[in-house]
Length: 493
Image 1: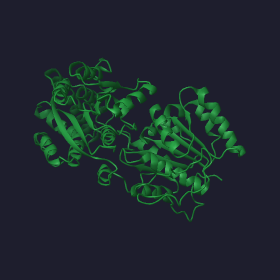
Image 2 (image 1 turned 45 degrees about the horizontal axis):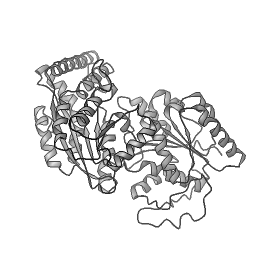
Image 3 (image 1 turned 135 degrees about the horizontal axis):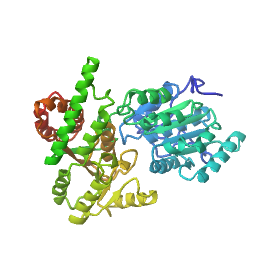
């Protein structure tokens, strides 16, 4: 049976049998499952929106993208789909593709709760290729019922993994985790076309400044399935916790202000040139020439020196705070040739060296085993805080986080949304989260540049305002942003 055209066409009487919150699961699965075959955990109770997401995916013939807020249970929803497929069409292979190695191990933990015995296909080719070959052979010979494979994006595109894809049966489900990454050309080309059952997971599937990549992603996995599950929805139903939001406005130094003004003028000239050439207003998203300038602007904002002073002032009065995450500028946001870890090291020095705060850094270079130790120390309170860069943006599950201090956000809305959801995951004893967000104030600009800056600020302010509006202290948070809105005539946001 080949499932590419209509993966569930043989299920005209399909009916979801998965338990929702408040229902007993006992009547759904009573027989003892075979080792390594999908089975719902006995304690699992799916929320209504997860149930709806599953129904929508099946109704769309086994294709689709789940756009669900970070922390709302996308992984569990996806594994529940695999269980249902196993029950109804004898699904044979589950293939999960993740952007990072630490997400492979995190998925493995979740898979084990569903009675799965995953092959972790990353790093050393010898450690997994023979295992995968053997299990696929056993599947074809009938001596094995099910195979679970979890791999990374970088392993997927390698010859070792690509050579195995032709042996995957038609009854394979591919799950793209943090699927927006898979819209990149080389990754999208490596996705298996013979696999008909496809599920993409992302709180932010749209790719930043890449409409073509976004469309390629939806062409492969299927469109975003309605209704989307937003942050507001997640908080309202208790999937994420409530929060307090405190914007901290930071001024640029004199040298930074001069550099900022020069960049803004260059951006303005580039937009004006495009308008004269095309006879239409310049657009940030469509102007390829602007990307380097916008990146420079993001780097300047990300590494603003006065953020360190603001951090010192904030944490000097919060020395007893625990379970705090500090988001720093990553390597792509440093100014000039400065070390990519400059801000991270400075933050760790202020917190640990000057204030006596028990912290550790958490970066892409931190070995997986050490990351797990740090996670446990953080959850227990032995470590008061983690000083991290981008590796904590996507998928990492540390629900014990109670407070976040965001020193750096890129212009990419995905990063902002990912971080937001990361902090709001529920955890025993966690009634509410607290977020301190450092927002750089643009310097005083002349008439030539103020309109350019106004347009640049509009999108960024919209995110800050949205976050303020959803906070328990919405009124105070909005007042803090009001002067910035007035200054640039953005009161309509």
